[in-house]
Image (cartoon, rainbow, N blue to C red; front, side, top):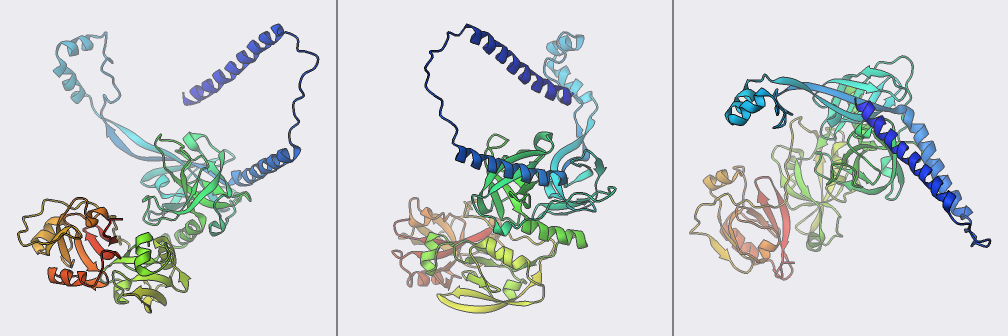
Length: 517
């Protein structure tokens, strides 16, 4: 049915073109004769045409090189119970004895619906992938094959296979699967995603809406994007058209080499809006090699929550915007805790590599050799120092939630002993176990509790809310209202006050200024 509809639609379009041409032909027969002398149509710029043809040729060659290794993936999951009357409209029984009965007694309609047995509908999906080993190993996205009971792979030459030995890494949204085919299969050559630059031409290849071997062109729009899609984010952004069904397919350069796995889109329409994201192939290949060799991915970790250095923080630390990664929390019993790292430490360099934000640090850390010791350059209390960190393997269930500042007002109890600091616009009190438990904090959190924030105050301007915990002021830890009061004496609202603020889901450093900006 779908094939007929699809071709019917194309047929109608072609028929429309034919009718239009016929109509134009009749009109041309009635046109008056043109004057003998008419203005000459300017010739096409041969140099520009040659450049366009050169680019077209590059697209064609890249697509021709990559297409044989592209596969279409169809999945079938567990059957889900669906009401036997689902999909029936209100007038499905119009003109029948049942319809008349339901009209007279609407309650009978509900009784009828409850009495119709449920049917089970299998969950189906589609996506793309590409062959990375001639023996039949295919690379795709985890979300394409996750929870699937059956995965069917269709090659570019039309052959179909049921995939086996599926291995996944949800943290990066990468998966591999294996098919058993006769002979060697065509393989897509690996590119170098680290060498990709913004503005480079790329092709996205896959099966959008089930249309196999579709090729679209665009450029690299940005690098190092994070969209809160996966736990390990460092996406390439492209404006090459990516639609449902493209997931798992390759993003290739003009050499026909894969530089990314098309993974997600940002859209308001449900389809292509010009913003797509791909997992860099260097990361995906590192993950795939481990999945092939041992079925799981081993990665090192630190055990810290971090934030980037924005304009205000750069002024406080005296470093350029974007340089370093600022620690907001150190979890107990982790490599960071063993190295005595602290919240407020600014990581500038690790294992000899400059750090320019959280994703840089994450990329360096995860590939460290477990058990080895590495030097880390940090800034603490305005002084640079080096600490040694011993890499450890990340536990399987490890997750360190980090969250931007948001309202934590869950109905705080009355706070008659709260101390007010009108200049910055907050009232604070000592932490109480029963209040912390009610707000959802861990028992080991330290600081003072914000019980009120004045509207339009400097504190409100940077996102501080009632129910948050202030853990540090400047370089000084705050464990009581007295600590908070004393810490304020050594800082200036005019120059900006660096404050570490916590919520139950994480923490952030903010800079409070007199003008609120």
